[in-house]
Amino acid sequence: METVHIVQPNPLWIAPFVALLLSIALMPFIAPHWWHRRYPWVAVALGALTAGYYVFGLHNGVRMLHSLQEYVSFIALIGSLFIVSGGIHINVRGESTPMANVLYLLAGALLANVLGTTGASMLLIRPFLRTNKYRLTTYHIVFFIFIVSNVGGCLTPLGDPPLFLGYLRGVPFFWVAEKCWPMWAFAVGTLLAVFWVIDYRNFLRAPRAVRAKETAREEWRFDGMHNVFFLLLILVAVFIQQPPFLREALMVIAAVGSYFTTKKPVHEANDFNFAPLKEVAFLFVGIFATMVPALDWLELNARQVGIQTAGQFYWGTGMLSGVLDNAPTYLCFLSAAIGLFGDSGVTTPAQLVAANHLYLVAISVASVFFGACTYIGNGPNFMVKSIADHAAAKTPSFFGYVFRYVVPILLPVYAVVWWIWFR
Image 1 (tube, rainbow, N blue to C red):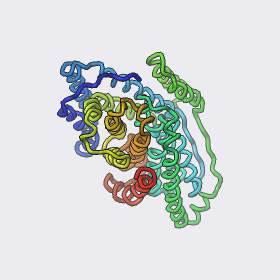
Image 2: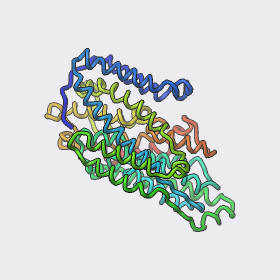
Image 3: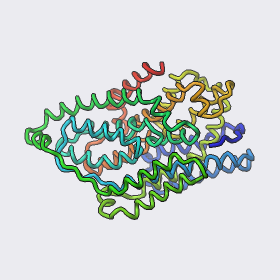
Image 4: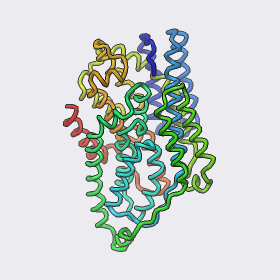
């Protein structure tokens, strides 16, 4: 994507961006009913306010059009993967053993790089709950969020929204897998090992009748497999750069084709509806508009922020990705890294890759990994919790999730990742 001229914004205009992110983080808990009805108006109003500042105040409407183009590409990918994955249903009979659970989560981690963390989570969470129904614990839900909904999607731009935004800005598609796979392999492998120990102990405590059921042979049936064709169409479209919007048009065609050719019972079995996609579409149209002043200010004033090392970028990106949405957090720290090396002629992510790729690796890994630190760090986290709650599964509260599972399990793994690769 071609670069645009950046004008120094007044830092006070970062306030709409902060207000929107705080609203997304807090309003579902403070005033859930009001937020559910009004979030589209809040997002659009704050986005329009910032767009007006750029058009009439800075006379740089081209900058806002550039952000709009990124939004269209972003929502086309997220929406098409969401619709296509919603047309595939996995029907499982039988009960799962600890090792089968580990293999299932590993498969989910790999699939997240093709369907995205949202698509993989929506496809796999219900079968995972069903196969563990006789001894389902909180750990099953938590580790599913850790591995499938977050850490697993670190190998391709399809895996998680931050990485796709980097791809749209010029980061090579296969660069992510090439540079991030060691961190991915360590984190996924460690989490799977910890989960196996916990799940095996739980398995031994289960009644003999339950253990006998779990060692019985499982039966799997896949419905809606014609949607694999539409998935392949989306994957091909990702690599199309020209002409403009052909990539997005093919994604929309794949989504429409999938929706109208999928039988109604398959959608019903998946409890498929457009509510999650509607929420993402409205919130991110506001995010993509309001984040522009923050991105531009960081790029032009990176040295004043005081973050200089790759390790600082890792922890800074990570901590904010855990409490705010990880996609805009990624872009903010990407802009700061570009600005940090601006004196060396770095003006684009592609040039940052060539100048000092470790900074971009730190930002990429942290934005994906730390999205698992709270329910609001990444889109599928809260979706998985809602589905588990609906299935009468045990799920921790917001702060229970953080202090009982993230702090003792997840953060030590992330600290080792920092120690080995970014210290």
